[in-house]
Amino acid sequence: MANLDDIIILDGAMGTELRARGVRVPDYKSSIWSALALIEAPDEVHRLHGDYIAAGADVITVNNYSLTRKLLAREGLEESLGQLTQTACSLAVEARDAAKRPAKIAGSLPPLDTTYRADLVGSFDDNLAAYREIADLLAPHVDMFICETMTTAEEARAAAKAAAETGKMVWVSWTLDPEGAKLRGGEEIPDAFAALASLPVEAFLFNCCSTEAVTAAMPAFAAASDRPVGAYSNPVRDEPPGGEPAREPTRLLSPDDYALVAAEWVKQGASIVGGCCDTSPAYTARLHELLR
Image (cartoon, rainbow, N blue to C red):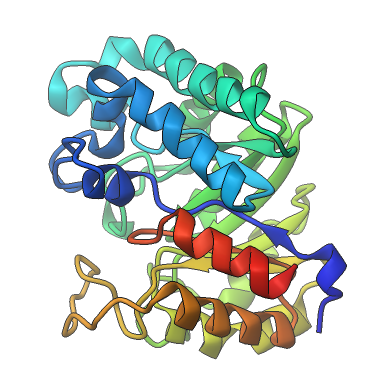
């Protein structure tokens, strides 16, 4: 079990929480998702970052998850990548600077195309070039990178290599299949580790999958890693709504229940925990109260 003094608390959802607050956030499969708020509701993005820090987050992530050229092209905004990334970074930095407690800022290196779609992951060289562009835009403003919601080993390798070239700290987070047995793209978890063996990745995580998938995978994951491990899942026991392939939707876990599940991950060896889609600052606060 990790020492509770060393537990790192991450923030929670951006897109789903902005939507819950009345901001227009279209479907992630056909839009630019939470990035639309950078244009239509930047003050709400700033406020949400601040709320997560106040709730106890040690790390907040820039709202750049959907800022990739492929996704921006859906709205004819491909050439706005630099401008929107600057806006997203500024909102995170301003919220951090205005907060009453310290927090680090992570830049997101997300799937370059639709989330969960391993079949849309491009070639390593194409991915590396795209991730280098995003990482270079983020690097002056962030403390670290999270290569997140990765579905394949090679996707993660391209993102992690681009992030590492900036000299910043790098974490990698994969999304799991519904049973927590493999990556969502079908590869074995040890193969994902092996693909990153030559890169200076400082922590490994799981995200954007169910709590039961994380719980099933965490013991072997922690035992196999010589670096810190963690998770920030969706607050459901089974596959989250919208997952591929979809299973029966299950009710959302309360902040209390989610924190208790996260505490089990800590017992299994996790030292980094947070929330993904459908969480909120209330979840962050409960994680902070229980684990810190």
